[in-house]
Every structure is written in C-alpha cells, then in structure tokens.
Length: 571
Image (cartoon, rainbow, N blue to C red; front, side, top):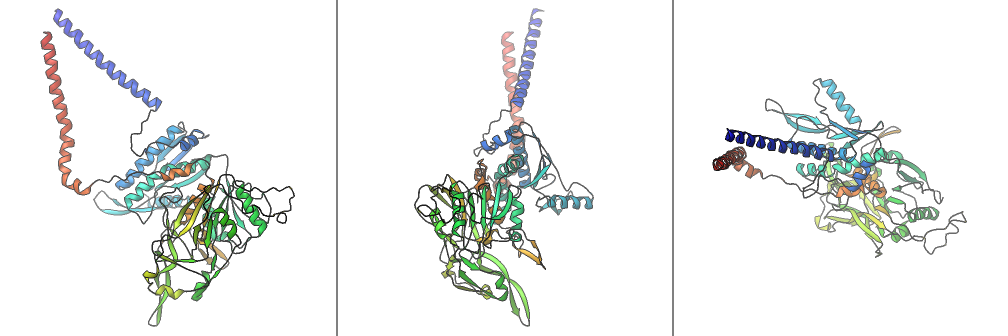
C-alpha cells in the first residue's frame, strides 16, 4: 500500500514538473512575442534595419497602409522575393510601432477577364510596371501570366507606387532577383520618408541659356515630382535667388553663362547648394541627321574656369564606342529602301560604377554625342568618384566634325578603338574653393552689402559631360508633343538606366538621412548545385524522412532503458 502511494506521488511530481516546463515555455514564448527580441544571425545582416530607417519609422505620425501586388502562383525566385518583401514589411511594422499594415493581393485572382484587364490598367496607371511570366496550370501546361511586382504605399490619402523588381538585361534572372532583394529597404523607406516628411525639398531647372525645354525633360520631371517640388526659372544675376532650393539642375545649356550668373551659382555652392551639371562642349544637332549629315563644333559655355576650380575639366571631344546603341538606317535593296538596324558608335551604352550607391545595380545608361571628363587638381578636401564611363573599346574625335548617317553602314576598324573606360560623369564632394576668390566682383552685383564666400561648407555636385542623358524623346503631332519614357530604346523597347541614374543623383545630392547608403547593401547569391540535387535527390529525401523517425525511436529506447533501470533500482 505504501509502495503504491509512493509511486502515485512520483507520477504526480513527474506530471507536475512536465506541466511546469510546458507553462514556462509558453510564458517565455509570450514574453518574447511581446518584447520582440530578434537576433539576426545571417552573415550579410539581411534582416537588420539600418539606423536611418529605424529613425524614420519611429517618427512616423500616422498609419501607413501598403498593398503588395505579388501573390498567387509564380516561379520559385519570385516566391523568394515575395518572402523577402513580407519579412521586410514585418520588420518595418515592428520598427514603426505597428503603425504599418499591409496585405498581399493577386491582381489576376478574378475570373472575369474584363475585370482583370481593368485591374491591370488601373495598376499600370498608378505607376506599377507589369512583367510577363510563365506559369503552370493544373493540367501541367504552361501559360503566360502578367504580374505587378510592386506595392502601393498609402499615407494621409497620398498613394505612391514602388516597383521593386530589377530588370537589368546585363545580369542573370537570379541576379536581378537578388538585386531586387538588396534594394527593398531603400526603395520602401525612401518612399515612406517622402510621403511622411513635413519638409518637401525644392529642385530647380535653370533657364535662360537655351537649356532643354520642358517637353524634353517631361518624363524625368514627372518622376522627380514624386520626391521634390520642381520649379523652373532664370538666375538673372540675382544673388541668393537659389537659396531656397536643395539642388539645381543645369540641363544642356547652349549659350554662354554670364559672369553675374556664374557668381550666383558659385555662391550658392559656397553656401552648401548642390548642382547637377549636364553640360557638353561640342554642339551637334541630332535633328539635322535626318538630312543625312550634321556638324560638330566647339561650343564654350564660359564655365570652364569655374568647373576647373571645382576639380573637373570637360574636354571638347566626342566619344565613339563599339558598345553602342542601334539606330535605323535606310538601305537600298534594288528599287526599294528598307529601314534596318545598325550600330551607331556616337550613342554609347555607358557603364555605371558598381561601388557607389548612385550607380549600384543600375542598367547601362544611354549617351548621345558624349564628351569626356578629366579630374584635375590635388586638393585633398575634394573627393572625386567616377560614376559613368565608356566601354573598353572606344575612341574620341575632336571638332570640327562632319557626322554622316552612312557611317552606320560601315564596319568600324576595331584597332582604332584603343581607349578604355573614358570618364563621362563624376561626383565631387567636399569643401570647394570659390571660382571668384581673389577676383573683383564689384561690377557683377548691385548689392553693396553682398560679401562673397571664398570657401564652401561641406557640399557636393555631379558633373555629366552629356546633356542628352536627361533628355527624353518626343513624339511630335503638329505643334503638340508627347514625351517617351526617358532612356527607352525606341527600337527594342529596352529601358536603359537614364531615369534611375538622374533620380539617384538627385536623391544622393539632397540626402540628409543617409538613406542612399542602403543602396550599397550586398547579399550573397547562394544557388544550389542542380547537378548534385539531381544525383543525390533520393538519398537526401531518405535522410530527411528517415532520420527524424530513427532519432525518435532511439530516444524512446534510451528513455525506456534508463526509466526502467531507475525504478528497478528503487524497487
């Protein structure tokens, strides 16, 4: 009787200890879910938000609702992208103190074709880019399916699209998915920072020297307007007129700068202003090529001395590059003429650098009659970074030039293209000397109290030796015009990196949060060995299925053995 009671007490203690352990595990799990203790053990810290991101999310005033249009049946790489988006959104939600809600939507879910097409049109009009993929049906067949790998971020009745799938034709599909995952945090937080900020930066296109017209920069203006307030105007020699602008764009001027205007720009820079220079020293009319030939003439802009003081020199020479765009030329075939594609060495496909946030994972950039840039001076206070270059097979021509369309029909002599990686765009950062230091300026300004600075505060500028990089093509209909997307190859439909390059330049110039550094994030692409998967598939399936069962059986035998031994010993 006593022995049976002791056994009952022992069993009760065992059950009590078991229940206490279960309760402790549940309590710890609840505490961890409330405390949100998260440890990122990945080598590349892909689940760790940057400090600027956390700061912006913590300061978010109102709720943010995000609709992600990446759901349903899709290939495995896109499922991996979807999982990364969901994980990033969950990290954002925690950092924003649950002020972010999100949902995943399959835009192809509706069975009604008309409703589906209307949904597609609505998403496209809102700014999401469609992508065609190959999907499997239930019968095992293949079909084309349209997806919209992006999201709509809604804040205070403002809705902004974010396209996060990269489409760089120069890298593999897997690399594009990886680059998309790398850029998720930047793409999302940049948009959230824009819509939730109380301060909207102002950017000005300068006018007055035959710069590109509004229609010629219409596409980039529309896309920059998502981040900035965009104005246009002339300086007219008025000091301080640019002080309210975070950045200034000088887009392909054709007339020399006056000394008063140069002084206004110089002092704007001395006070911390940022400038995107898109200027060239050789005047070539692309429109004149319609007649069969055009000329290239040296065109000074009277800013050569100013840019030299800042650390660069634009050379009056035109790049010819074997890695170039293709144009249509008329070729006679008997009595008829046909338009056939031909390489045009005057339109290089420029290479972006891979080591800077502005150009990381950027598509190639289309140039037209591009000049070259030299960095000059050894001032340690000015840091210089080359952003765009020609290919390894290029050369330069010095004006005066006669450029004939028939050159496209000729096979170029590769031995003549012996120059490599000619700089086309340069970022300058640091403290700049004034271009008017030790110069008399009394006749340049009417304000007697005006006192120029001889040295700038810490600031930055970007110099691009091609004004056409920011120019979109225009479809003319009488006096009206419709802009084509900036950087779109009208022959192939390929989107070059021009638009993203300009947007990244402006975001970098005015970036006060340090968000652009997020574009430098790198993740390693760990692909499985497909040959080994095929050869060892059955073996690893047996391991995965059989090993857990074997471990359970062995554990049960060991537990029974020791339990029996303990109680036998007690008996």
